[in-house]
Amino acid sequence: MSLKTYLAALSRGVDLVAECEGMSAAQLISLGATSADAAELLALHSTYFGPTSFSKKQRTAVAHARNQQHSLSTLRRIEHFVSRVKKKVAAWNLRVELCAAASPEVERLARQRLKEMQPPRVASERATLRQHPNGLATLTVTGSSMGITDVFKGIDQSRPGASFLESQSEGGVRTQATTMVVVHLEDYCELRRGNGRGDGDVILRTTSGATMTGAEYLERTFSGEGFVTLISREEGPVDLYRMSRFASTKQRKMLSAENPTCAWPDCKVPAERCQIHHIEPWVNGGETNVSNMVPLCSYHNGVNGDDPNAPPERGRMLRIGGRVAWQPPYEAPPTFVT
Image 1: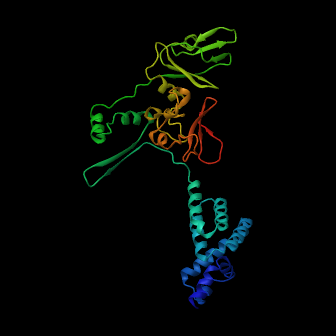
Image 2: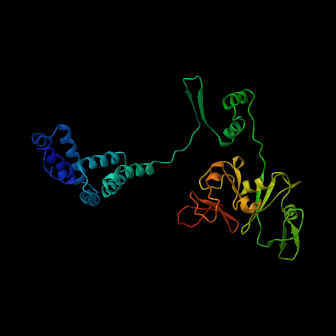
Image 3: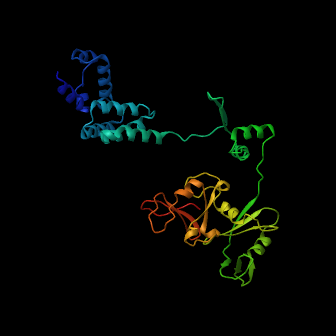
């Protein structure tokens, strides 16, 4: 057999496998196949032409393999990936999909589908230690969110190793918890704009015609310590109050109440480690008030598309009707994140 004839036979793929009907390994070996090749051909024949309770899927897979002109090597790769799937129906579904794909796409698609089938990893408490040749070591610890955050906040990033070890010998640091109450304005209150007051408070009008400040409204409703953020369903965050006095970090605490983490979709950086992003850039006349700001981590603050007259290459943060939204860089409606 010439090389051309051999390669042509291999390229026939599923039709070559079909010709093994009724043959034994010994017969294939007598025709010149190695024992490994004979075993592989018979295994492929059993899969694509043998009895199965998924006969319809089997016929579909064979038809797709013929249509795509998959070679014998491509069928081997398909079965290599399918063998990783334990459930039979899922394995057949993957086989059919891979047979329908063009040969150059089989591996990429298979890896993607296998990754999607993996159950989400659930973190559990653990600690690992890795020693490095230069005398350093890496300690990786998984524990409670608050506990690990306490430890991390006590680390001096200019000398992380030394400061971490010092904090452990000194008992570490504890995060001071501050209660934050988020209040949505009830239907009988109306937010008034342009009231001309110089103290920065908001004015609410009730259905009885009476007016009161945001502080008065909260004093009637809440007592005790803690921060309270007033949020309008239409306007978004309105103002922040503490029962005894205003907070010096008022706007940041208000925005943190609305977005406890970076407002960019799926980002988990805590708001306290975020930068405050101007939706309408400061250089373009954007104001420094809560209706024009969201917390973004340094990375997403940098990639946000600030120019409203240019398409955002990575996306852009917006406020729509008081709610924070992300405009994707492709043709799609904004995604609301609050």
